Image (cartoon, rainbow, N blue to C red; front, side, top):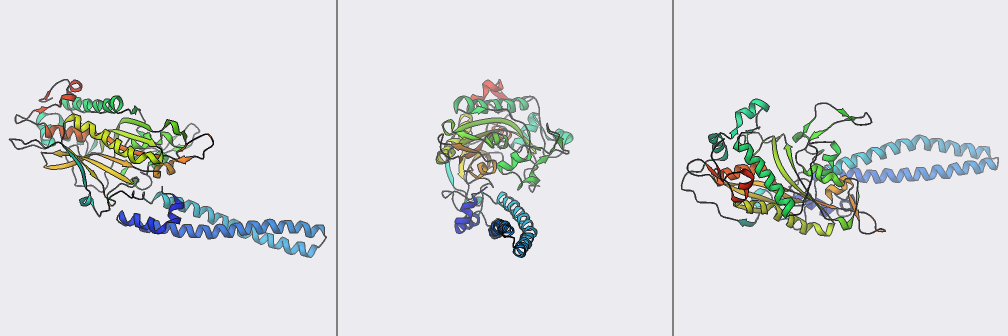
Length: 437
């Protein structure tokens, strides 16, 4: 969440930041200001009533000591009135505190000052380009047609087993998916210095609240159909993770870290689950927008002053996988109206898909500043006597395995219908050609 002190102290800057995001969250911000003003007003009333209650209670004792029963009685009546009024005010104060927190959880991160201001994805500038698309002497097929022709991709079977937007990979297709995931993990752990984790695919609601998926995006999440119990017997609802960002970032939830141990760089390969609410009719075939997919996630935990440089390095780490695979791609910076809810600055990596004649996103790398850390109460200490400060969190895909799988099929297809395997991937895949199941 945003720093409430900043929102109070710099309302014009806060409003401008939300306006630069497209303005749709302005009513939520204004609701915060209204609730906050009422909270301060009621708090003042409560403090006055508490002080007066203590003052009058003391005066009652003094009046009784002087045996001034009339004065004592009058003062006791005043105390009685305060005892009736004060609980109502305190209850309202508690309710306002809860409503303020709810409103803060619903306000997106304010864009970084360096993020380009824009109104839509059309305003996202290209930062750099890497590699040129191959010139094919034949008509390129899209990955769905290629996969089905080779017998490695079975969408009807996926639908038979789980419904629309699920896929089954068969034989060499399953092997290519596994090879890609292993290659990505090895690149990040052996070359780029990330510590691999194996994390749960089911997490508690507070984990998703910490990274910003809840409460805003609950409609996009898969939730367990019934509550289970924790060790103490309390009911616990769990969610399937939409990305390993959630469990990896929450490793530091509620912690106070030693500054000397920062930055933390962690990674994990997990299945990811998204309902893709509101995207009906978009990419309904193939591997681009499925309800279940594999992804290697990269997460950094840093000191505040280090996060801008960390975002550049995290993005380069994700780019390095595409460079090694020899896939043509470009890096774009998202404008203020296109960045995600929890991000303050984001780069997207987009790979060229010749079968579709377009670029497609395979990674999104974001600096969330202290936005997630405030929700998780994740802090660090610069020294033994120093006050705790909020860490900064960053995340990025390194990469979305299914989308890179699709990109390899399209970019390295041959006229005879087979697919050349990138050289760095051959030791993992076991062959230089994918010719069928």
